[in-house]
Image (cartoon, rainbow over all chains, first blue to last red; front, side, top):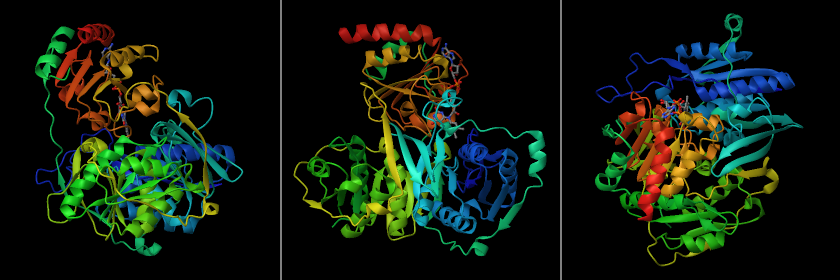
Length: 262
Length: 325
Ligand SMILES: Cc1cc2nc3c(=O)[nH]c(=O)nc-3n(C[C@H](O)[C@H](O)[C@H](O)COP(=O)(O)OP(=O)(O)OC[C@H]3O[C@@H](n4cnc5c(N)ncnc54)[C@H](O)[C@@H]3O)c2cc1C
């Protein structure tokens, strides 16, 4: 089985991102970059499927030269090879990402593409669905293990492959949906799908020698026109810390007489 | 024919409340475009839902029913919505940022050659129709311009008001879909609903949320009891869900529900940015945490540095008394 997974470079998910004072973009001073957490779940799931079914895992990403670091991490987790398509974040929208990955799909012909369900920078949660539609494939978005990480060690996995179909548990409003999709298929991974492994030192060393192909959008023949442009940034309304209350009685008093919510 | 098409969501023959917030967005966008809005209802009992939905001022309510739409799947629903959008000549197609909206509307965008903006929280103040949306877990607001003639959007319901029925009844038009079920490559095997008698987290006026500090599933009854004393919905952090104190449906945050209740009470919650992303818009925030340095206190209107195992039962008791007075 051949699986394609995404490996996007993003700002540290736990960093409190702020805008530059001129509001022209985010202040990246001192901000670290990481592999998108949702992509880590996608990669981990691909590795688990490979352990069961054999095959190859190709990690794909769109980014500048610096995205090689996150690509190497994906390889160190266990992906077999990588493809990095040159593209700067501010020259991308979800649609261009989806069309680029659709081209990579045509080139690689995987049985499964597993995306991270969203990237923690743009937070759009679109690329997997757009790509599935461009390719005319079925989709299982927001794949997760229904029982949370504590249940992940036993019981049913969030994703299972059998008889040319992938079965996924999806976290949706109101419960958990179990969906079956004929392969080739598109899946997007949620955080509760699994607990991503940390690369071991020997695997980090090995990853340095794994093949990493560098392509341009032009190589793939992708039209780079954007459908969505971010034209301005602003700060969200700032919320100020209120007061400390000493005990439950004071809290109730404030809620009734000051905030008047009760 | 209106410029805006709102994708209505429904369950068991009733319109979902989230759709009423999207209608509020549609009215604002329509005011800017100088037109009106239509609704589309896809799925079982669409006609019954259309009758309810027709009281909110839509120019028209389109319905699509049939065997292919009995059970929701993204490819089938996207096909139907795109078809209706083309038929209605819609320029903006908007649905809620629900799991259905997020799953299905990107496929609609591809079918219509449209650009899409997710999680719209407002409309830009300039001349054209631009949209405001949170990025980086809500730490930044981006204003996006969609360069295609047609725009597809998901709308954050917590950021828009719910609308009241304006009376009247919009005309209903049933549209026959050309969707070919044989082309469908997926099927729903099973749905495991989260069962709760408490108010819906996304819509509740009061929310009581518990975090990792609650420590166990058994202890989570303290959160449930407090919620019941208040008539509140229950919520949780990702850590609490991961530890199986409660089901995933109750997660608040960047990857969970986005809420804006009148009152949010968080107990044993540190206030990670991803959690704050989901509840920062609450009108009044109360935090109970034994660590006075916990980041949640930076957004709390009322902070109580204390042990939740002492506070929760006491607060529950006193609220019950207060209510019975
Ligand atoms: C990409 C990404 C997306 C995420 N999305 C979400 C999301 O949508 N929602 C979300 O919630 N999280 C999300 N997270 C996780 C988030 O980063 C935090 O890990 C999580 O919110 C922490 O939950 P918590 O506050 O319950 O636990 P902790 O951070 O462990 O905090 C527990 C708190 O309980 C307090 N406490 C302990 N005992 C007591 C006691 N007896 N009395 C009072 N207080 C006590 C402690 O002082 C502590 O502050 C996401 C993370 C990532 C990386």
